[in-house]
Length: 145
Image 1 (cartoon, rainbow, N blue to C red):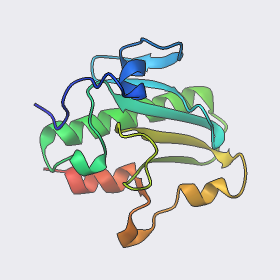
Image 2: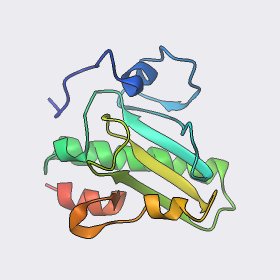
Image 3: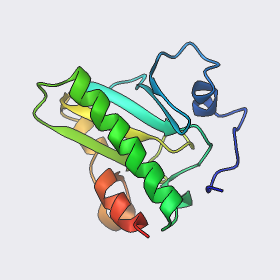
Image 4: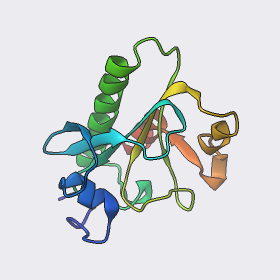
């Protein structure tokens, strides 16, 4: 069993994951769903979320299940951006760490640059010990069993 607790009825991302909203799903499988960010920060900006409710990166542990989930989320995001933004020269993949996350349901930001405005860059920057944005690859290093 993963770190989550099943679907949370008040969680907007749980509602999206069980397809009970008008949000268009770009990808769906038994583990994750992907959709466009409602307020895109870049030329393409997708979110990949687990179907299961896992609050934040802080709920992930150094174990096979969590490592394979994040790996799968990253693979889905990379595949979608390569399909939809093949000419983009730079991609970013990562997670906001509490208290910098906007929704308490794990979500991978998948960005095909350029950013829509220069100030959006700040939102996707690591703040070192303070947290901020953690690149998916760095998170995977922390989770590798």
